[in-house]
Length: 242
Image: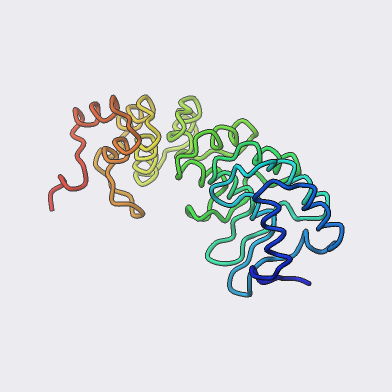
């Protein structure tokens, strides 16, 4: 049994046990069906593991860390990949759900903190957490040793790491603009000011979202940053010249 339909009674029972936090029921199922921990739910076009089920949006299912421990103890691959439009691991999903407790459980079980494959540019779990504004998960990943890019540092307000990039390299204009947009998305005034001083474009719009840095800051309710951006010539997307 390498895969199960999501409508198979065994799959339905396992998912229900995970989402309701019934760890004992899950343990009993795993004992009765030893391959269940490694089975994939879905079909050849799209499938996931039970660890993905445990970390799926919106996350924070009851007894999540205990569920992770039970699955890993039964043989689940903590770094298993989603099969479909991306290749995210359960850690990517925990980061996207801001589920810090389950994130810690996965890392304690050996999850690759810098695994690629995110829906955000094929990046790491930190890329997902940062892009989706899941700040608790993002900062926890940094605390646990995640590699940080220029954009990560700017978005999370890691000023010392941000400045270090400029002492060891010369960021491209594209990287500067992306980091500046990220700082505004994260409401990080000091980082935004530093990047604008180093040549970032105040009204740059990213290819993935029709929002200027001002729009990103407004969406994040960073009112002081919005006022400052206005003073620097920042405009919202509808205000830009055609």
